[in-house]
Amino acid sequence: MKLDQSRAPIYEAITEYRENRIVSFDVPGHKQGKGNPELTSLLGRQCMSIDVNSMKPLDNLCHPVSVIKEAEELMADAFGAAHAFFMVNGTSSAVQAMVMSVCGRGDKIIMPRNVHRSSINALIVCGAVPVYVNPGVNKRLGIPLGMSVDSIRRAIEENPDAKAIIVNNPTYYGVCSNLREIVKLAHSAGMKVLVDEAHGTHFYFGDYMPLSAMSVGADMAAVSMHKTGGSLTQSSVLLLGPDVNPGYVRQVINLTQTTSASYLLLTSLDISRKNLALNGKAIFEKVTTLASYGKREINRIGGFYAFSRELVNGDDIFDFDPTKLSVHTRDVGLAGIEVYDILRDRFDIQIEFGDIGNILAIISVGDSMLNIERLISAMSEIKRLYTRDPAGMLDHEYIEPHVVCSPQEAFYSAKTQLPLDDTLGRVCAEFVMCYPPGIPILAPGELITADALEYIKYAKIKGCNLLGAEDMNTEKINVMNIS
Figure 1 (cartoon, rainbow, N blue to C red):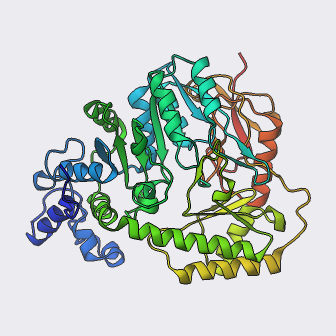
Figure 2 (tube, rainbow, N blue to C red):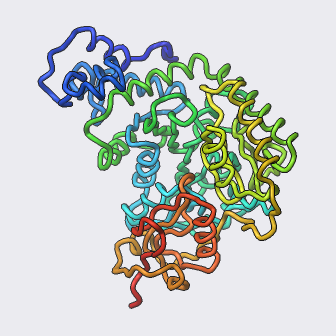
C-alpha cells in the first residue's frame, strides 16, 4: 500500500505539543529557551520551543511505537526500502550499525580501502577483520575510483567466509561502482552488501542518476539526508532491505546512539523526506542543471578540469554522480587545498573540501545560478592570479595499504609515540587522515611506508587539516610496540 507522502508525523506532533503550551518539568533544562536567553536570541524562540525530550505524545527513538514509527515507515516507502531508521548521531553511526549488525570478532568483511573512517572505526569496536580491495586509480587525477567487478570476484573467491561487502555509492569525488553486479556476486556467495551512500541521497529521487542501493537489492544503506537532502547536520537514515532483521538492527543501533534524540534533527528528517518525496525529481533536475553548467564554464576557463561522466568506463568508473562538481587543480600548479583556502580567504566562498590535487563543491537543493556564477568567476580569477609551474607536485591521492593486523588489535595494543621520520616500517596504531573527506592515509594495523609519510608531510605543507592522531599536530604517530 502506497503511503501518503504529504504527511509528516513528527512535525505534526511537535507542532501540536508547542501549541498546547505544556508546562515543562523535564529536561532539557533551558525549558523552551526561557533559561538561556542568549541562545534563544541566536536560534529563535520557535527553535528552542521544540528542543524537547522524548515523551508519550512524541514517541521515543530507541523504541518507536507511534509518530516516529510512522515517520520511519514513510521514509522507507519514499526510498523503496523494507525499513528505515532515523539516525541522529550522523551517518557515521549508521555505517557503524551496518557493520556491527553483520560482523563480530574475527569475521571478515570485504571493503575498498578508500572508505570513510567510520567503517574502520566499526572494525575497531566489533573486532571484524578487513579484506581490502584496492580501488582503481585515475593516473591523471590521482584519485581512487570504484571497485572493479573482477576485483570483487577475486576477493570473494579468496575469502568465501567473509560476512559482507561494503561499497561506496558514490565516492567522495562522485565515482560509482557496478553496484548491481556486486550485489549479485555477494548474494550468490551468501554475503550481505552494505552501502555507504553518505553522498547519494539524490540517487533515490532524481532522474538519470546512478543506481541506488535499495533499487538493486542491497541489504543495508547509510544515507546522509543532511548532505544533499536538506535536513539538519548530523541527521541521517539507515535503510534496510527485506532480508535484514530490523529488530536486531535496532538493538545494535541502540548500543551507541543517544537515548536523548534531538527533535530538531528528527523533525528535519521528517520534513525533508516529505519535500523529496513530493518534489525530489524537480529539485534534482535543477541541481543537475546547475552542476552541469558549472562544470562546462569551469572547463572553458582552461587549466582546471571539472570531470564527470566522460570518465565512465563500465568498470571501476561504472557511473558518475552528475550533481558532483569535482575539479582537478594540479595543472595550474595549485593543490586542491590551496584553491580551497584561496576561495574562502580571498573570495568568501566555502567549498566542501580540497585535497592534494582536487576540490569538490557540493551543489544541492539550496543553490542558485547566482552562486554558481560567483564560483566560476572566482575560479577564473584564481587561474589568472595564482597559476604556477606544477613541476614537483605530488600526483596521487591513494596510498596502497599494507595490512599487518586487525584495526582492533592495533588500536588497543601497547604502543609508543614516535616522530614521523622514526615510524618508517613500523605498524600504525591510530588513524592519520585529511578531513574532509575522512579517508585514512594510515589506519590502525597498517605498515607505515615511505609513500604514506611523504603524503602526510606534503599534506601538512599544503595546509590540509590532518586529524586522527593522538598528537594534534601530527608530528608524531603511535606505533605498535615491537614484541
